[in-house]
Image (cartoon, rainbow, N blue to C red; front, side, top):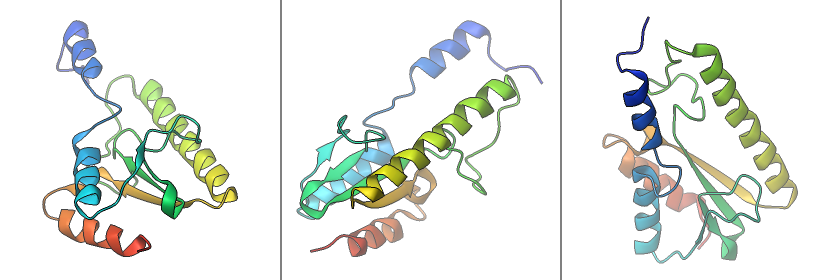
Length: 138
């Protein structure tokens, strides 16, 4: 199946996708801040450059996009129909890097919380954020 966009349009669309300050990430950050949590963002010194770092609680929160991190059994992760091998290689590489980062962080006694993009959709967001709050020490 051919791409529905020409090469220039597809390139432009892909260049607009952000790696930081995404809507799901901002949602979690605003919620945590409102609940009194203070955090660091995208700490380059830590493996995987975590989205949110709560040093006081030795806790890290990764907010993963379902497509980019290959969320299995999720309706938001569908293998692309064009350049499939390239995309699967990219996504599998992300998955491998995620696993390495989590393993290293756990060895350093960090608590890891992963939130998926689909868990922050309107139907699930309240449940997800309340669950997150319960996982954090007070």
